[in-house]
Length: 89
Image 1 (cartoon, rainbow, N blue to C red):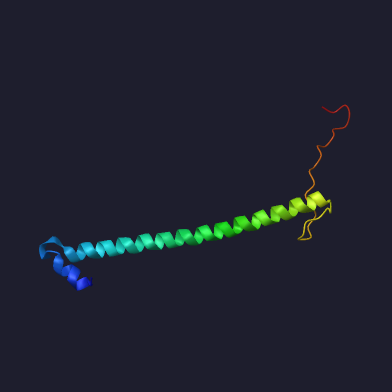
Image 2: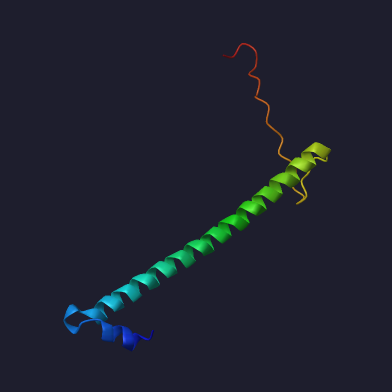
């Protein structure tokens, strides 16, 4: 169906062209919103995959006992609690 045939089916006193225009604008807004959300979800998914790969590499390096992770930075070592000198509360 073409737009003129749809407009011919709508009574003229009901504001048909305005209703159709409102639906077109609303549909455009919804499609734009969905496209933006899909783009953000894709970016978030890629970042999560990158973080997961880095964590897997860090875990593999820790199990191997190499002392460094693949990007060259030293592996994180948990800090030991500092001991207070005797007689200090």
